[in-house]
Length: 341
Length: 216
Image (cartoon, rainbow over all chains, first blue to last red; front, top):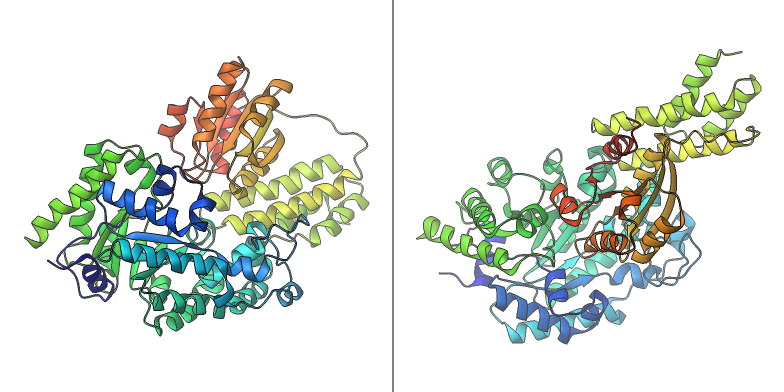
């Protein structure tokens, strides 16, 4: 049987593996399980490593999330006032015109404290668990632009001023690509790009195509040129726009709010899949048996060609009972025996 | 001069077509024609927002479209208010709404607020990242029919249950109906924490709220 990292690599390269990795995408669960706050964990490589490794071992799933990288908006726009006139330091809600873009600071990944912390975390995790796949959650240019503009102005710009939104995406693209290169060089197994749920639930296909997809196609290609493996998390209802996502060069899609079998039938020969146990209605609120059945069926629907990673459909809630996560792991192991002997 | 019906349609279209800058001129034109401002607001602007809501339900409009439509509606209402000698309270119920502590995602909450206002409710917006005790204090100190709470994150959603417990402890639970919402929230969760209801969308929220106050 392949090792875990080897299996994930094979899946992301479209070759298929002889096992079903169970990467639960549990981020807030380990942090809260160990009694940390999010900022506390994100700022401490030791705490992050302790809670991620500890929870993974306790619940038996695979993979380690090294953190969420939000350093770009912070570094480029943290000095600017938001729409309420306050300087929050996080770079949210600070860009509302073309002139504002000129006020952004240059990005220097080598001087970014958030990146330094993240690299240290990756190093500690790799020492602690050399055989576990490590990934980082990182925002695509459109998501960075969304943060810099703030939700309402960004949504409004998608209708009334698409040029502003697209100009901001273009402006931050180098920073995103540069950050990805550093993380690839640090040895992460894949980069996990959440299309924030504004992509699927909140905006039209037309807005998605113009404001997000065009930028993703260009940026992801550049990122992949550095050898990165990309998992695109389609958070929301993407059924009407998976054809657009297909052009964005993801090595896998981490799907949600859809049916794995349906996506597998339509796109399974073109892209590997990850997902898709509903984190709230099944993992958090379901019984152990319901979780087992759902997870088992997911594996049977998604892993017949060995190109599937079992996961929740988004971040696993900290309120999820341990036995439910363990049931999902057990289901994948049982499905693995049936599918791969 | 255009007829009142034509002008009402023009106002409605400004909102529906997201003309948030043009709407003010249309309001002025309507007033210059001598037509009733109250009627212009309700049968013009609010009608446009209702039409936009219908397209949202049908999956034709999305959140950005609704945001621009509501901006157009509020820009028009602001202009109309200059011509209203006194406001008449035709509210069908009082609502307090907020996003619970630790969560700053307020787009959904804002849409519910807008739809509630469009639907005839008097809405007090407590904002986002609202301390749990603030909800309790507001219910205690004000005459409120419905308390609406939302959360987009699983880490903050338990806060809604804590508010309900605090209301019970303060003997205030029976004073107010409680609705909850947000992406991770489900009917089962709403029932579990003792809320009176959950709705999936802003449009459904208005209809449900009307039922709660007997106005449906």
